[in-house]
Structure formats: structure tokens, C-alpha cells
Amino acid sequence: MLSGFFNIIILLGALQGFIISSLLFFSKKSHSANKFLAVLIFFIALASLNLYIANQNWPVKGSIMPLVTAVVPMVIVMPIGPLLFFYVKAILNPGFTLTKKDKLQFSTVIIDLVPYLTAIFFIIGVLSHIIPNRTYNIGLFIDNYNVYADIPRWLSLTIYLAISIRYIRAFRITAEANIYPYQLKWLRQLTIAFSIFQSIWLVYLVPYVIPAYTDKLLNAVDWYPIYVPMSILIYWLGIKGFMVMKEQSGNIKKPGNLLPVDVSEAAITTLKNAMELDNLFLNPELSLSVLSQHTGIPQKTISAVLNQHLHTSFNEFVNGYRVDAFKQKLCTDDVKHLTIAGIAAECGFNSQATFQRTFRQLTGLSPSEFKLQALQNA
Image (cartoon, rainbow, N blue to C red; front, side, top):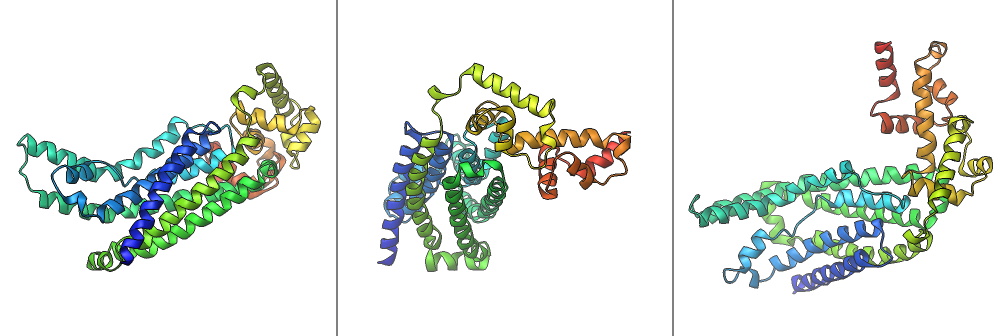
């Protein structure tokens, strides 16, 4: 009786997810952030629908439905982590677009596709008389694979969740944070919700992957401890996603209202001159308002130019010049007596944590590693 109630909740959650994801993806107000969220919700809803179908009797009847459920991918979890991270970036940086490197992060979906590809190859092999028809062995392999595939799935989402939290915290200390108070509040709630879900999943996962407890756990509670909270997450994501979409659409310029090309090019030239000729980045107290006063360009225009045309944020723009200055100073004789922290301070960094993080992001090395390489090449 209770399982029937849970199945209804899961089915309604799946249907809600499909409706919400469609509305978010195809909405006229939709931009990249909403599309990331739409696909994320779709994959969660698809997994929920898969559990509902698995708990029904009709999928195992006849010869068509078992074939369909075996070869149609419905549990696609590995892309959810990257989608979450890219959603966070797109919310806080409206000009964000996926690069080829970003798209490669979705290649881990192969982990989810292995059971379905195995079933397809098996069916083709049996029909062509290449391999014997031993469905039991294939079914056993797929069942065992699905158990242990949940480990990289959980790890992937957890890692991307941690990266998203770190990205949000770094953004909060930037000058642009005051432009996105509503979005930052929402993203904090989002990461808390996913953290709670990951904790529930971990508690379930530990006994699930131990062979002696796998069947006992499934016979006792099935997948309901995971999928019922997942259904609640779908409802919540859908409602909040729409609210944020409306808020975001009011703050983001539509393509037809983008800054004119001549205005943007003039602003970019002025901003680069402020950095390259006036060395404004050396000021550790440099902020969006200070840059605006120096150049005479409104703060909103600066943010729009950086986001829409340079695809960067104010802090990333300024810190890029600071890192370049650090690398140049490090190779000169008159600063070899200074510490790394001292050189960084001379280049405009007023936070060692920000300097260390920014330097590694831009160079792939720590400042000390870069210094060692510079000395070796001198």
C-alpha cells in the first residue's frame, strides 16, 4: 500500500519534471542558464520515470516492452554534475557559453550508457548468430554494473557540487556581487538542497554497494529513500527555476538590446587603456565604481561589455593583468629579494588566497611552481 503511494509521488514528480524542463528550455525568455537547468531537471525526471516503470508489471509482459526498457537510456546521471556547475556560472555570468573543453566534461556519460550499449550489442549479436542467447549472463552483468556505477555517479555530482560552492563563494567577494543578490541567494539554496540530497544518497549508497547487503536493502526499502526526495527536489527546482528565470530576464539584455558595436569597441579600448597605460590594476582597492569614475563609463556598461564581449567578469579582467604583471616582475633582477607575497602585493593583489587561486586558474601552476620554472629557465 505504501509502495503504491510512493510510486504515485515518483510518477507525478517525473511528469512535473518533464513539463517544467520543457517550459524552461523552450521559453521565449530562456537563456543558457535556464537551458542548463531544464536539461538537469529532465535527466532527474527521466530517472524517476525509470523507477516507476521498473515497479510496474506491464514492462515485463510481451516481447516489445522488455526490449524497449533494455535499450532506451533512462538513467543518465553523469551529466548532472557539469550541468549544475555550468548553470551556476551562467546565472552569475550571463555571457557564459560552453567551450569545447567544457563540452568534453559531458563525455563521462559513457558510464551511464554502458548497460544500454551492452544490451544493444547483445541483441545484435544474437540476431546475427554471432553470440549465444544467454540472457541470464548479460542480465547479471548489467545488474552488477549498475550497482557499482553509482559510485562514480555520486562522486561526480559531489565534486561538481563542491566546485560550484567554491565558485559562488569566490563570486561573493567580487565587485559584481551586489548586482546579483537574488541569484546568489538562490544558488546558495540550490547547493544546500543538493548537499542534503547527496548526504541521503551516501547513506543509502554505502550498504548498497556491499554485496551482502545489496539485495537486503532493495527488498526492504527499494529505491524509495532516494527517489522520493528526488521527486521533492524536482518540484522545488521547477518552482524556483521559474522565479529565477523571471528575475533574470528582467536583468539581462535581450539580443536586440545589446550595446551597439561602436560603443562596445570604444568601451573595450578605454578599459584596456586604463589597465595597460594607466596601470590601474596596481591599485589593490580597485573596484567597479573606481574604474567607472576613472574611465567615465557607467558601471552597468562596464559589466555588460565584459560579460557580452570579453566573456569575463570584472575581477577576472583585472586579475588577468595582475597575474601578467607578477610573471614579468618575477623574471627581473630587482625583485628577486622579495617574497612571492611581496611581489603579488606590488601587482595589486590584496588577498593571498585570491592571488593563489587566480594564478593557478590562469597558468595551471602555483606561484612557487612557476617561480621555480622561471629560475630554471633563467
